[in-house]
Amino acid sequence: MGPLPALSEGGMARPRIGIAGISIESSTFSPHVSGDEAFTIRTGSELRGYYPFLAEGRELGDAAEWVPLVHGRSLPGGAVAPATYQRMKQAIVDGIRESGPFDGFFFDIHGAMSVQGMLDAEGDLATAVREALGADTLVTTSMDLHGNVSETLRDAVDLLTCYRMAPHEDWMNTKERAVHGLLSRLRGPHGTDPLERRPFKAWVPVPVLLPGEKTSTRLEPALSIYAELPGIEALPGVVDAAVWVGYAWADEPRCQAYVVVTGDDRELIAREAERVARMYWDARDDFVFVAETASLDGALASALAPGAARPYVISDSGDNPTAGGAGDVTWTLDQLLQRAELTAGTVTTLVASIFDAGAVAEAVAAGVGATITLTAGARVDAGPAGPVTLTGTVFSLTDGDADAGTQAVIAVGGLHVIVTERRKPFHHLDDFRMLGLDPEAADIVVVKIGYLEPELYELAAGWTLALTPGGVDQDLLRLGHHRLLPGVYPFDQSGDPALAAVVSRRGEDS
Ligand SMILES: [Zn+2]
Image (tube, rainbow, N blue to C red; front, side):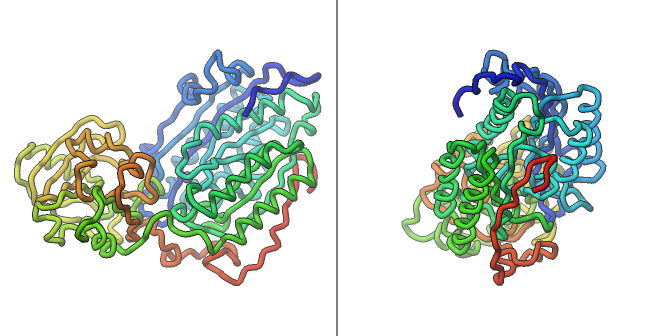
């Protein structure tokens, strides 16, 4: 991403650009419901401040009159409550009507929001945004690669792109690229014609739906597929190239992979989109889990084997809250508590985590050092197992974490169980250290996560991704999807798709 192009004749030196959106990844297989409390709502200067590249003095920040409206962001979770969605949607539409008109619009979404009773929430939101904006506003869309690109969404916006890395180390860079693309179009070289400013979109759905843990861009074949994109983007006549893996834990017809290449050269973008789509389809059997996978018993056998590497990290992947799991599934903890070798005190195991506000309050009432028996977890997702009973010592109590609230560590022999007041993902070593725990000195670290975020990846001397049950079960075929399109691999292995690009731009037939 270089500097912005020089201002062309008829281009806009300082366009008015609105900002709004909703970001959540929500599993329809999780009983958790994402209500108002799940969302952080940003408006005005706080919303603009969320994007460092829009700061005054930065090139993009100074290249437009920014009008930050409203944005809702949530940790992944269960499907969104309809009233919560409608309130956020209405606030966005009202903001556009009150503060418009806009030359451009930065639509910042995830792309895997499920709302109870709807099958394409982002398509619905994009349609409402377009209706409020009017036809002439150029809309750029920044997404997560785990989002989905329905025809409705595609047709409502002009530019769309997504992350090129999983884990998403390029998440802010992607938003910057989306905004850079928008400003480049508004500055020229297409003059004052709003139709010519719109790029063509070559869109190819790829009927493959894989869990994120099989599509890390650190490994083949995703590594090579995503490596194609910067080269395509650099070709004359191309604006952007993007590949969506899609979201596996929603039962909706839009859930599958997509390739979209945008630009002015219709033949070139179609050819490149089809080429990448073919690579993805041809590689469908080659996507493998990012780590050795096993049942929990298998993972523990490796972790407890003589001479096993330390620390040994086990991903409790079925209830990963950053994929949409409830975060209070007790199935794994229940199994760990039944292992005498873990509770004896000779092995130090850290277990992150379950949330249960009532159990935390009981630990606080008992105080650090007290011996306590409490029942915890499975308040939201009791599908795989019911609440567990913990008898142990209150090892630590920690107040005031922005995500978790109050946190208690209950030590059952060497098994250190983290219980939080609210849902919290554990991605950083400091998440453990703030509780008085030392992950580097532990023998085994069990985390509700899929592929390991960078600090845990560095920490892990050994690692097994345990295929445990929960709302984001990695074994997709046992979840029971009913609404996917026919031919989506691996649910239906009879597909033989044409993988032909649909090329369109708003206001013109394809
Ligand atoms: Zn993602």
